[in-house]
Amino acid sequence: MTDREHLIRDLFAAYLGNDRQRVADALADDFRFTSPFDDDLDKAAYFERCWRDTGWIARHDIERVFVRGAEAFVTYLCLATDGRSFRNTEFFTFAGGKVRRIEVYFGAARQDGRFLPQPR
Image (cartoon, rainbow, N blue to C red; front, side, top):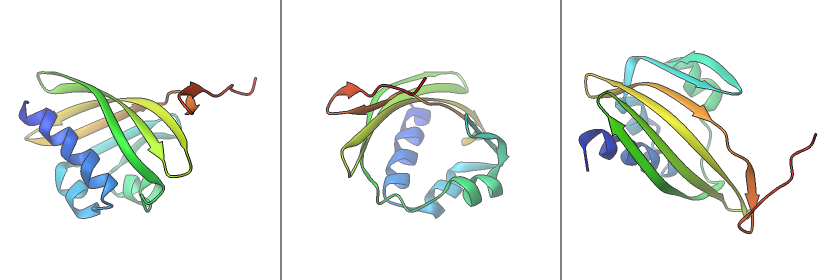
């Protein structure tokens, strides 16, 4: 496992453990976060808008991590305590041993191992 893969896995564990300080320490000062709901948030805005109690998450199943140089993709299945689940892919950029950027691409919601129909 590379240092960057280890950092990604540690971030997922810290998030699941609701360890905000451990996550903050892993993010670069000039960190940026983008998702379909959030465009180019800085570190402070990320914690203000996106951080919440993670008690709703039962577990993350990291399915694959691809690291190439200072970039990585991770795909995971997130299982909620209420039985819902979803699969996302995130693109990470690293600088100076920290995460500089995360771009999240949402997957379809799942329940009982099947995709849930999306409204049209």
